[in-house]
Length: 151
Image (cartoon, rainbow, N blue to C red; front, side):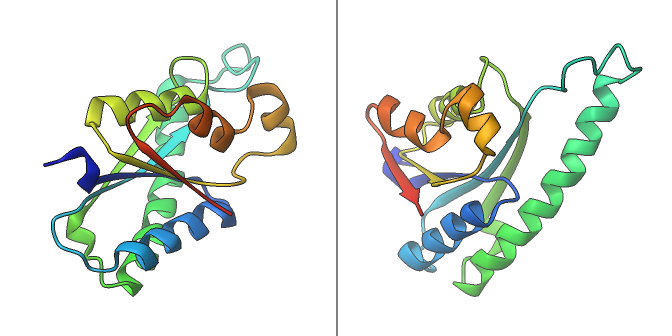
């Protein structure tokens, strides 16, 4: 499949992310031949996580449960635009490469997605201060692919 027909939608549980999903639905409707993937990247465990008895497997399981709720919400939105759930893949992943935005870029490259869709705001002000805006990073680092930033 051509990269231009592959769309990666990076989401979290924010209203901004769901607006991005809705925008994809509005833009593509039930167009055949598209490959959609809803991606949820979650951050590494917080500081002192392991010192307080935290377990990475338990953390991942908790994050995957959160992701499933996000995926269900996003799939329901896409179904409103007649995009069948069967044509939408989902992926939940721990942030690698230091930032959520870098992980999105890594997934995009590995999957050869031609378009990345993100919400304008998806992280808290504190996270944006520490890690930068995900949408800003996508726009500044896009090379040979399109970025849709939805407000």
